[in-house]
Length: 337
Ligand SMILES: [Zn+2]
Image (cartoon, rainbow, N blue to C red; front, top):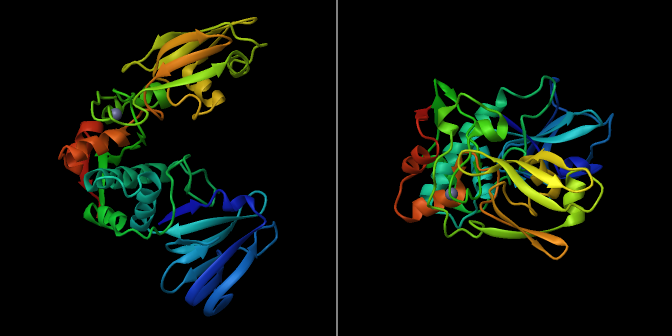
């Protein structure tokens, strides 16, 4: 069972819940039935003090704020009130992640590979849930984008074709990270997340994402924005890469100006915004009037499977296991159930 926080819904004062057919509402963590009946269309408050509940459809999805989800909806006590949390089995979770992460334009091989990666990733995350937190992962990019029950059958097929398969290293599921586009080489997990000792996440060359939209990019940054990102008085007068990692990503950068600063390239990316600086694979830096123009490659942190590369491999006839063996070398494709 996976508990998924509906992040955006959690910021509103209430959630709208709709269910067709038989409904069962139970006190969360208690016994008995608070309510049972047929059909539901109601706003449930999330304010502190509102009753914690488990709302379940006996058949079909539970619709939260207009979107269908598998399993049941928990209204679980958080720090400032109730949190909307979907309680779903692993396979239904994977289906909703495939639709959120890849969409239906991907080859079946890429979708199957993503299904194995996503199933593995969430299992590796279950152990790191802080005690007392009423959810395992959120439904956004802090874990994997989960969109509930998608209408397209291809996602169910890709999940079912690989049902129960995970990637293991020394008997444990690996943190099977993935990202949109690597730009030519994936990054070691040790460089990006400080995660050492997992050889399948050491980084590999990738020639399969060359036709991706963000294989190469250019971004224009104002001298003031760069100074702000480096916590110095504006304007910044120069940027240079001080250190590169395996595969060529920038590890640290020097920002020059009134108070020169050295910072991790990942921090620069975080502070400028991931849309402004799509990756730390910064290949060239030029001045253009008062601005800096950075050219680089890839989109995302670069660790694990390159999704656009998986698509490229799938288009060239590779199978899901070929794709997984390329991006997670040495990981054992293992049947969990
Ligand atoms: Zn790639």
